[in-house]
Length: 512
View 1 (spheres, rainbow, N blue to C red):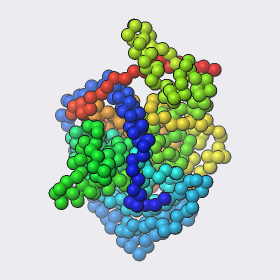
View 2 (tube, rainbow, N blue to C red):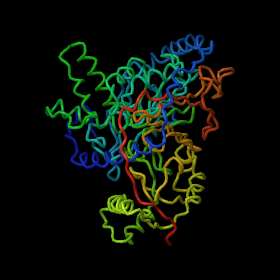
View 3 (tube, rainbow, N blue to C red):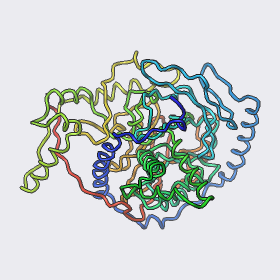
View 4 (spheres, one colour):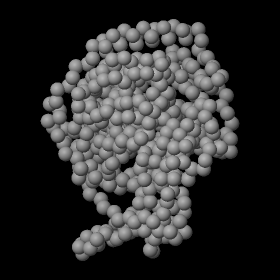
């Protein structure tokens, strides 16, 4: 695979189909938000506690550590630790492997190490297992692939610093500023990370990108970030203006002012290089936008799933549905089981009758989750390979909420704790090994963040720092790794994107 900058691929034809499907999903998730969310504006007037005095000391500590670390790397551009299979790269240089491994069984393997200029924190180590094996030649929306699929923030970078992970922003710049203030975020002291979907739907997408850049916030790629980039490329390269309102803001990235043009070019480059996932080994945490199929290592996940999936569905159930379709539905409708049943729901409601039921094959989810739990150390360096562990039922990703599926986060059992967004209809998700932070802010809900406390050299919470900078009304949650985190939220200032109502058929499980 060539570097992203050398690939000039038009938007894939499938993107149009995906966009239409995505519109239906957005309508479905926004309806749930409208029914459940009450915007409490009084919360904005709540007193934000002062930052713990220890934060002032942290600035000096972090700066001193950074000086020592950089000085130690001046003479050694690359140091290889063979036991841990980790490559350390001098942050002052960009290093790319001149010789790339040949594709194995049709799988393209790419290994590159680059500096991320988007954030103030440089990525100085990239474990070899961060390579994502994929046959894809473009992103799901047809854009050139980023140079790095999976980024890693090493323990040396996160040590003594709080980590603040932010949910889906969707162009809500005002709420983002309020959230950063409420979390007492300090640039250069704390590390802030976004789960993606920085833009679209909200009123201030361009302002959000400026905040991300100026406040040195790290981000992973969301489906809306990828889609907006595709619309920008069509506009710039082919002079095709965006057809949907949510993409109109991309025209602002084209400016006749030289200073603005330079800044906007940097913002576009930042979007182009957003990784699909991010790991913080010091915390045992992975950050991604949408989800991952449990039981599959991160480097083997499909890129599309990382930015689009919501549910997992048993392969055996899908196969049974294909072999024995419910009632008279065609194969084309079985995939998501929506269109015909939705019409039947509407007809039933008009007649005052209960919605039709869809009978699905039985599946033992408890056994499946138990098997995944026994494999939770898979993928960790030195762990037993998945192939030698107890058999885990095969699951497949679904972008939509599937009648035969479950939220992927409710099934996932490690090995790292995942923070993600994308699923506004389910709002805040608190699962044993995954935390969903999409509070539907753009629909009038709330913008969430999770604060991870600063850790010392031994990976323990620094003494007296467990609640540093944490608001008094923050919610404490336990991660799958045993670490505690604090959830903070600010309400939306208004409904930025009016939700639409969508209904579906009732589901009955247990058909043998």
